[in-house]
Length: 444
Image (cartoon, rainbow, N blue to C red; front, side, top):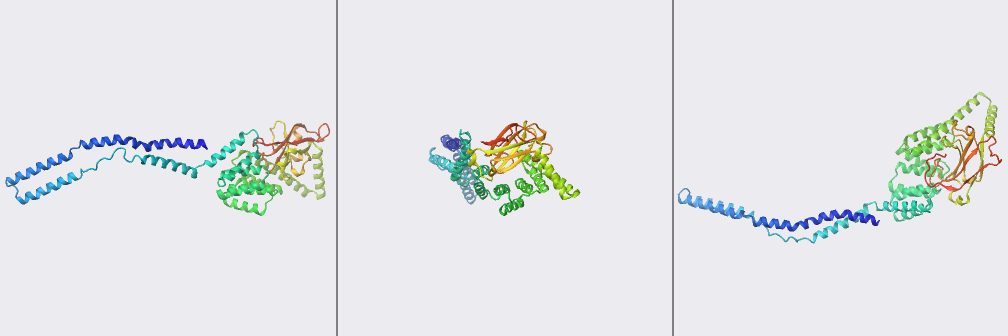
């Protein structure tokens, strides 16, 4: 802040210099005006003209060209003309060059005070203080999301009416598994900025995930209000796609996600939705195939066929994984936080090969990844000899990695028919670190 005020003072110097400029020029201007008035001979010239014209009138009267009445009339007009010419030439005496110099410093002080008062009320000094706090935490050796939240909460106390403080604070609450605080911060931001569709969409999304991906009456009210203001709001459309997908309405999910992709400016978010569309299309194809089989065979035969397919996938290539959470990180997330167990190709060139979703409350957990957990028919575990395991805990429930997520990894795990390593035990993955910044890799 000290540098800011110094910069403002430096910017004021040219203005103050211009205010003092007339005072510095006053002496020279007064000298020039005095010289002009001393050299002015207009009055003497007008008087000489008057005398010549009066002499001419007297000579005309003596010659008998005009009578006394005409002489008196012309002489009166001549005196009136002389009076008018000399009256307009009357000037007030010049004041000293230093007269009024006290008003210059008074005006300079008034301008400086007005500038600082105006900036303190209308300027962005609060945003500058917010930026300084954020930079300080980011550059601190022990900087963490918790430290950032604490410092921003202090700024919120000092600047309760600064919307940028709340806009910086609510995503941290959301990504660190504090939905109640995130909702409160976002509601404060809405109160300051107005009920903008983008803010209402964020509020609806947080409440949606806090309610275990359920469209409660409160969430539905926010959805209706947002879509009434902006029918193409991508956050709302993406959330509605998730809700439809969770309930097996894959056609609706695909429609929502396609419309959301058209409105997203974030390429990573758009790519995540495209992957979701691919999964929904795959599930939709499986549902259609199952419906055709049920139409062609008896229900008992269809059930037997599906059980056989499931058993074949379970006996096919796969990986058994045991997931547990490091005790040091147990307090960072709630039991309802989402856990994504993902298998990827070692080179990272394909979409995820298999995904299983659980919650922190299920940990420690042993699962088996196989072709039945594939996101796309074009990317399956059976297509690779080795896979890399990534386990991520997402407090926000979002598929894309976010700052504050917890992560554990295991590299180069063999994909075997039995689904276990050569030692005969499941592969153990420990969730032991925190994502500091957004990852560009779509682990999910």
